[in-house]
Length: 358
DNA sequence: CGAGTTTGACCCGCGC
DNA sequence: GCGCGGGTCAAACTCG
Image (cartoon, rainbow, N blue to C red; front, side):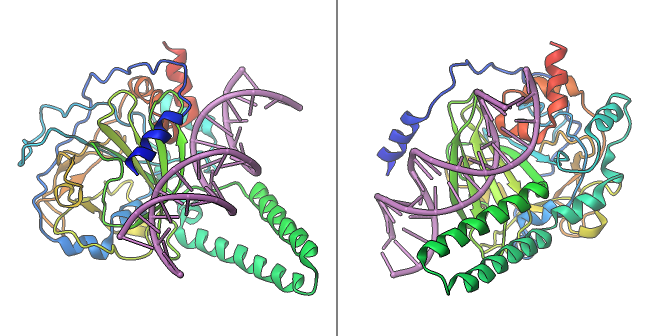
């Protein structure tokens, strides 16, 4: 098995381009992470990590992972750890109806994030139930087609199946693919697949441009749960694993950790439709023994900032994300260009802007 | 034998 | 329109 992986890695077509090392200096996050003592583990089971994805914030994260260095103001992490966790509440709005130019203009003008202007459409479109229903309808279409093809021979069946596929594809064409809200975070880990308590099935792996490390695609194995996650290593620091979750779990976590971190978004950007706190597993418990995640949580989100939680109804020791500071698009773009996953999270024009200003 | 992984092929969106 | 890269599919394969 191990040998196989090595073989695969050897077969990956690496880009000729030398991955440029982004500058990770400048710790910009005004955040503090609360200690994540393990407690209230059942919260994880009942709420689930991906419940946090219910927090839709349709803004452009100007600086995704603007720094790997914890700001000096951070409260000292209780357990000694050589690792870091960078948390990002993502919002892709490339599929949103908001005009991206307008968005950029707003950003340049220093206007507040568009979260408050577009979340509803985003939520609806990104609602797992919506995607589920669409998949159901697809299935029913296939079933209907199967009914029709029963009378025909194999050739006709194949044709019908092709038709069905084409129909589905055309549907997809007409209907711009909607993506679930995403949430990305970085961990310093030797293993790629962080054990977050859910069961994942790998469905793909791709070589990432400008990175020697492949990106793996996982889907939640629970029936009807369309949550996906992508895992890739930072090309700049191979010890850093970037994990991006997409979607919301429709089921409780199969594994109930003892502790969790709750991230409560700022009320101004908190999705009213999903008034659940952002919970994700306590790293020390959930992660593989090789993994180490510092209980610091970084967010580059312009509307998120982590402060020690003093008002959480769940656990006072949980860090709370709060809005506080908007980050420079330039600094983020410089960093993001070299992160395939991260690039995906940040709108193109923002990245381009950073390039132009080089 | 079922569940999960691997991996080549394919599709789609985007930039040029 | 074309090429590139990301994302997904699905058959073959592996593992427990």
